[in-house]
Image (tube, rainbow, N blue to C red; front, side):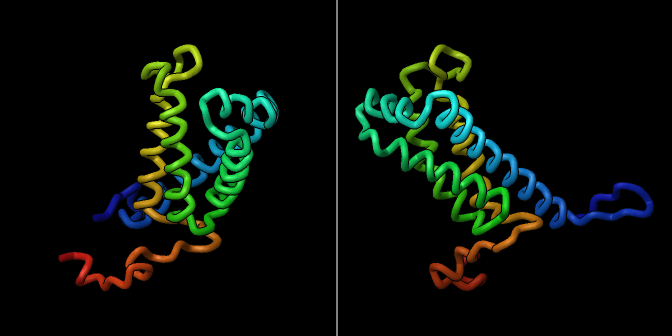
Length: 157
């Protein structure tokens, strides 16, 4: 499939998909960095974030682990380092955020935030995992077929 931008420029669907995966990757990375650094570190502070986790019945140390995972994941996504696996590794954090906000209703604009936004982010992280690295990645993800030892022919059956 070809997308004709004008008579002098032709972009393949593959290139557009790679570009879209890149844009998604950078957007997710910025979101994780902003959420960890601005919200957890500067607004609520890490001890306050740990108190919030404890109020949910979770161990306080988990807040520090989530903070570190969000910072590292954000940086790796922006840079394009093993994007597929980094994005998939963030899904459990986002599922935890859905759980944490589930009692507040659907809309994230509700008091204390609903579960709409974390659910959307979990979906986007899953899509990034399916798409892979996209354009301009520094360290391309190992293919899922190489990890499980499938060939293309076996994967298509």
